[in-house]
Image 1 (cartoon, helix red, strand yellow):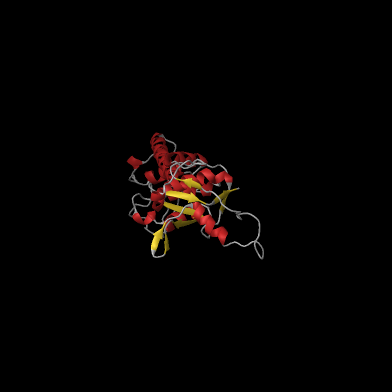
Image 2 (tube, one colour):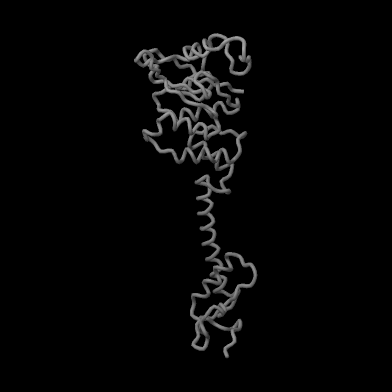
Length: 264
């Protein structure tokens, strides 16, 4: 009966081929990737005496040198892929800063790494010139995915059978006219006395942008605010520039957005 030993080979007329047939160089314990690849390479050679070479010999060391080069290429390629797509744990803060620079995203170190990676991923996945992505619901969903609890409203109201375009003060006037002093009315955040003004986002991510809109161009405006038109949304002051920059990236270029937002 044939007994398999460490000196047995896989290719021999007297050796039974099967699951229990040992490799030429059995791997014992945990080996490095270099050693594993070297052992695999040695198995590709014929098992005759002319092709026999000892471990740590000239031929074996030659294979080790080649394998180290191959592994270095594989590792570099993996690191390149990991730093290209923000979908893995190896995507670092430095990678975030580089891609934020490439996409023109405002860098905010107060955000978590996952939040910054998500913002980059959304920017990567957003195509250009897609009409459906110019709809207010898409822009609103992207702002909310970024962590901004805001809502969009198109400027265009049907009154007396015709479309009427309004300015921010018109919206605030309608809201304040419906508010009564007394009963359940509360004086607090978001409660306005009389007229009010709102900021605008048209061409700049900087606060207090100066941009005038004529009555004839109100059709190219929309409103951003709270869950009800005219109410104010709340956004951390540390994320104001990030919010404005994201609106600029999402909105069609010809639109201007009036904002009802408190930055706290």
